[in-house]
Picture 1 (cartoon, rainbow, N blue to C red):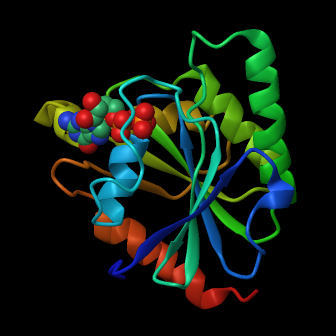
Picture 2 (tube, rainbow, N blue to C red; picture 1 turned 120 degrees about the vertical axis):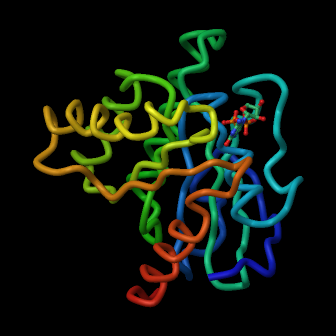
Length: 200
Ligand code: GDP
């Protein structure tokens, strides 16, 4: 699939104010600074669609984009930002969990993880939570270009070994670089394949 059109629709913190659930929706989430804005911009061929914020954790909204007039791409706030206080974190968790649990047209959550880091508890816990609530997800490894070629060969195996402590099998995953364009086609083809198999 090629993205020809990407329009911003609405931002909010309340799932009840999200657009009508009349088409497939894909959410992107991960720790602050994981490369989410860069990935969304790469996928949509639009350098400014998701603002690449200089301050981690700045965007705390559910941002809806309509893609090719066919499906929704949702940019969710980055989690695990050390500088937000507990109240703020609780509020954040509430609206994200409500969104995840109630959004009926949410067909997949892309959980972004930085290829350079070993598995982080916050990501693993989040994926377990998704599993417990029956929310389908896949992993998107980001910043592949930052790895040495020797690391490129082993990092997924290492991540998988950790995942298999919690899961029977590795979920679908994509290996991406927003700088070099890796993984773009695979990820968009995956979305296209799901789009063709669901109806709202
Ligand atoms: P977000 O906070 O998750 O939206 O992350 P950003 O997209 O703002 O990226 C955080 C930082 O990582 C920025 O300095 C980006 O330029 C950089 N970055 C993001 N993706 C890549 C990538 O694929 N390769 C490299 N080398 N840098 C990246």
